[in-house]
Image (cartoon, rainbow, N blue to C red; front, top):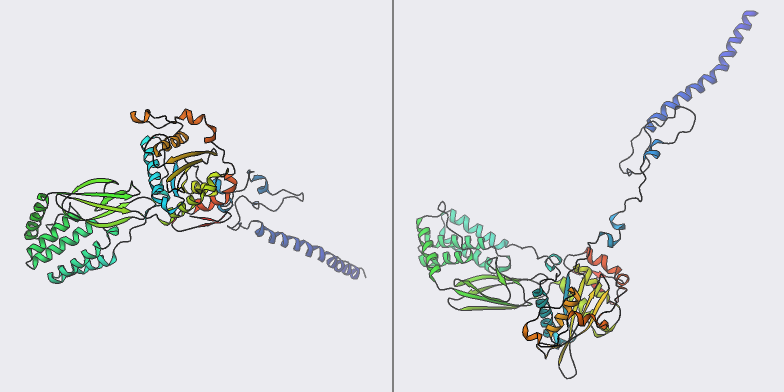
Length: 484
């Protein structure tokens, strides 16, 4: 009986203790499963300044513990912004003190006068030496050379024929390659053209054509004066005839190259090397044909072949065409140079857009027009986009060459606005009553605040300054629209 009771007691104790043991086992298992999740690495996509799980996430007691990462993350004033969220005025370079000048013709009959007035203002202010102009070379970088694949292919074919002792085919190929190079003077590499003529002459010499070889060697020297035949590639006959061609070329009387462009100030390159700027009075050159390029930032480059004759000047004139980007700026200047825009008190939105596009502090518009009697007149206005000051009321009478009302007097008033001083004047001009800096400053009607430019051009600034490539960018939110 006692044995039976003891067995029942033990069995009952085992049954009662089983749930507790099972619960303890489950708690241990749950605790083990939680540890790997607490030490899991944060995905790389999560920013570093966000919440980071602590290294030991399992508390050692039942009391709540604050995550360590929450107390270790440094407090910053503001989270980093994406570039798209940063206002344009933050990423834009600070405006320089540069000046942008545009001549504007209100009528087609006044087009030449507008170009002339723009040129006069530029020339006078450049001569002062204290005015910084916009860098058009940075705003409108020159196009990359395109090369001449056809000429290169013909040269390679000629070289292969020459190496295979086929002078007839080589001469034909080298002549065709030279013609292909000459047809595209804007993409010409003078050293490559000189090399082509050198191989052409050597091929003709192998065929017994001494006169043709000498003419080809002369062309090679005209293309690249420093060219010399390599003794490892060419024999003594080539060396001799080449030296004769060089001697005759050096003995020939030189001619001169005279180059004019509209607008002026363009660089003149002969054989890819700069020889001066327009107006170029005369560059001395040996007689022959030369590749000539006339290059001005913001304008499409002009390239041609010019023949320089012995003991005579060769004149070359060209009117440079504005590149698409500069054409858009001139269209904007034309809108801001109307009579209504000049009479308005506020700053035309196009003026602010021009300043932003060229990183200019001052924008000067020289408007020309024809009155009812057919007489030409001009009016110059200037805006200081930093201080919102404005110069107005500067009139030009194209019938006067000097003195009050002349283009030179307008340049003097403009210089006073830009630099705070009158331009230096010669003895003849001092006899005339001149508008000095003091006289201008005493006339407040020359100055007017041009408020509102920041608000009006806020939509222009970002688009115009972020796209500086070629082509046109429509700028929204402006009356009539502006595109650069």
